[in-house]
Length: 143
Image 1 (spheres, rainbow, N blue to C red):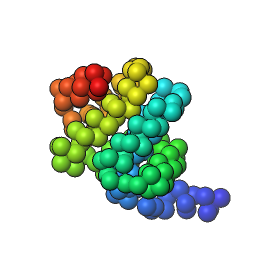
Image 2: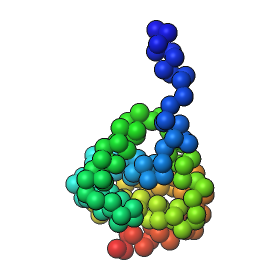
Image 3: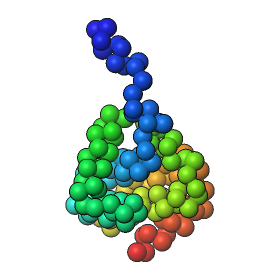
Image 4: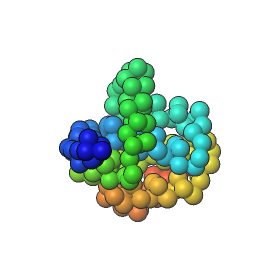
């Protein structure tokens, strides 16, 4: 029991400062794809493509990143550990993150209210304005 308590309060690399931004972004995308109850193949493909394009990763690197992101997402109880590492990124980078999120939302040609709500919450947490979020939503809905 003491070991369990020690592990609970011991510092880990999973603190917000220990998660690199691209892992945080991948975890948010993975969570977003699953928030409506099912991860569709089109959503997986969009996540893979968005991460490859944005970070210049190979297929193998993206597969490892998504696997690690899925593990971190399953262990997380809130979005703070993922939004904290990206909240201070340059505005252009944060806008691109929200754009990737909308790409995942519209990958299956549907916009579930839970997906919409999650993008709204993440945008607020990383300080992307409602106007910018809405503009990006409109752009991705038409794409």
